[in-house]
Amino acid sequence: MLAVEMKHINKTFGPVKANQDVSFELEQGEIHALLGENGAGKTTLMRILYGLYRADSGEIVINGKKVTIHSPKDAIAAGIGMVTQHFTLVPTLTVAENIVLGYSNKMVLSQKEIEKDVAQASEKYGIPVDPSTLVKNLSVGERQRVEILKALYRNARILIMDEPTAVLVPQEVDVLFESLVRLVKSGLSVIFISHKLVEVMTVCDRITVLRDGKVANTVKKSETTQVDLAKMMVGRETFGVQRQSAREASEPVYEVTEITLEGKHGRKVLDKVTFNVGVGEILGIAGVSGNGQGELTEVLNGLVKPSSGTIKINGKDITCCSPSAISDCGIGRTPQDRHEGTIGELTVAENLALEHISNYHRKGMLDRKKIQEDAAQTIQEFQIKASPGDQLRKLSGGNMQKVVLARALSRKPKVLIASQPTRGLDVGATEYVRNRLLKERERGTAVVLLSEDLDEVLALSDRIAVIYEGSIRGIIPAVEATPEKLGLLMAGAA
Ligand SMILES: Nc1ncnc2c1ncn2[C@@H]1O[C@H](COP(=O)(O)OP(=O)(O)OP(=O)(O)O)[C@@H](O)[C@H]1O
Ligand SMILES: [Mg+2]
Image 1 (cartoon, protein in one colour):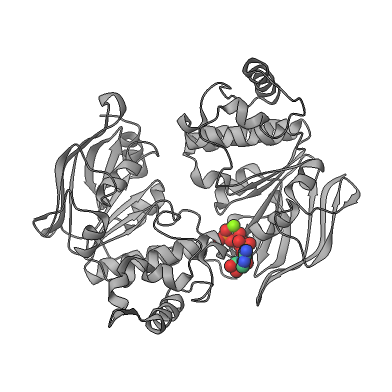
Image 2 (cartoon, rainbow, N blue to C red):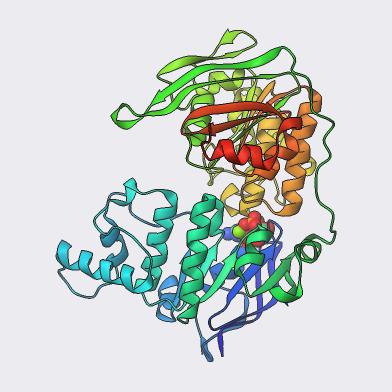
């Protein structure tokens, strides 16, 4: 029995053919992966299924019945739920309120009643949540669980998950997969989007690969390999980066000394973090997510003031500078969240110019022509699938990420703070970004690479620092680093 049939779906956005004659089938009780490069049309297809976009043509059949889906309301009525990366929860309400919100048809519900209701649902579906906690106090992984439970509470039998693991730490990914496997056993069907081939090969039954808006293939997991999948997505099979051998340390350009940040209740979120980076060196900072990387990035980018400690570039103290002053000192950054520091309503060209707008002032006027021209060149250089005049929010996730990186690199920074630079990128784009970072290194940039992807850290870094519970547990030359050694440090072993 098929849970979902999408037949001959077409969707264009102006000149962009986001979906072309796409046919897709989801069996009941299966986990089906949607794979494809950035901009291949995965999110578009799922937004059509969930009623957020309307297809130009094509048909949708749910459980054997042809349906018309014009809004998420129609989708929910058809038993479809969607969990996106950007959550739709209200932070100031409790978990229970968020789940019941806009769904229950009783007029008045007591706090107690809804909490009991949600506790029951949590038990029934095996998704642990605390009904009375405020959503704003939850971690990303916990919020995602609330989103899933919210969909199930609304009787979703078909669950769409658009890159659910991109925001999760490895342990949370395991928990998610366990829940999904359990839920499909009880009849749920899942569409799972991810760029991580390992995950797809772990949890999915079948895989559909989209390429340039068309279906390239649908295969069973048991009949494919990661190499095959990569080939289907991009038409080639070898990926990887070639680094020159690791470097000897040179004069440090960027020095971070005993940075401490106190969080709530005086707890030290960062504890005397100390490292330096030299000319043409990549310092990788590895660690399991949630050990202070986010806070460290914010401090280095000037968004949060540390409680104590100093940051220097070429000997100049910039500890308490504003983000724009830091950027003027020659420090580029790619924030961990690509929505930070970009404005979705503005065009790609405007976003590229955003952080150095003063370069485009001429006789008190903005030189719009120059902004467009520079953008066109950057777009070409970084192979971004977009035009200068496109609104940024209309770009696929991976292409947005490229805009952020391009903006940082186009200023030829002396120091680059790259935080999770390949999160949400497809294999081809990931390779591209990694090679760009190596190119920056060749150019002499001092690069701080904060990444939860151990392979990435190992492939690119000259030296590797491990952060654990807010402090640096050791800095080792890349040549001496092995996954085992780093894994131990990442787990807090002394
Ligand atoms: N609302 C929109 N307006 C204009 N163009 C859009 C819109 N939504 C998507 N597109 C375009 O459609 C194409 C497919 O985008 P989509 O978001 O479906 O890709 P994706 O496969 O989800 O990519 P990613 O892996 O980067 O998330 C892209 O070229 C994108 O720029
Ligand atoms: Mg997408």
